[in-house]
Length: 279
Figure 1: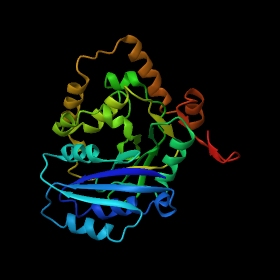
Figure 2: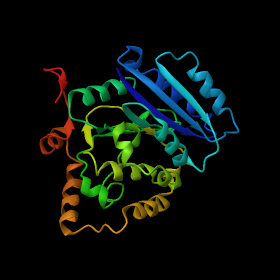
Figure 3: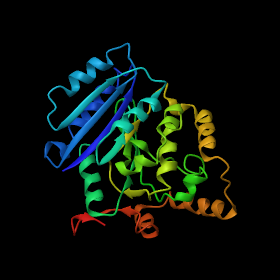
């Protein structure tokens, strides 16, 4: 049985945390016994009812372990670094308060990790509004290691959606947790930048999780995010070949799924209804 480690960093998140926790602990893969959960909720000494809500929402959970860590941190990625550094699952991911997973997310992830050569996976990119309605959805085309190196994802091409992304715990060995803890905005990009040196990011045409858009989020500060991205990238300078390829990819991102699959046959998995498997 696989163990899945999920980290939720939070502080003063009483308005959003309950829905996030419910989406984690009610996964069909857990209820069926297919997987067990290691859930690490890292609270930065909240002054509202965040911890109370976390304890109530996980009370009676019997399909793994839940740890609520209450300690001072310097920000979300300090909390995340602690969680990832102590995680002991086979597969890892993190999800912030307010965001939530689809009910069958873990089953989809396990399907791909068990049947295909996948160590790093993302799904449909989806966005919720304040009412938790799914209001945006698109299928990624392809993720290239060279474009993580030069910082094209999030600038010339779409971001990797963190809420839909899972990876083998072995990739955590590529992280400098002290450096991750120092970041304020682009910690997700730091993960992808490091992972891309070890594995290919595969895509599944399925709804795994989504991002809830609301006011006051760190992601609103695009300038600060880009500044941290530049520091992570260092001196990497894309050439004309990369620019041309990125322009071609930008067109492909707007194409229908059948076209994306044709031009990314080994990196994009779609469900084959006749064979009842991912292909």
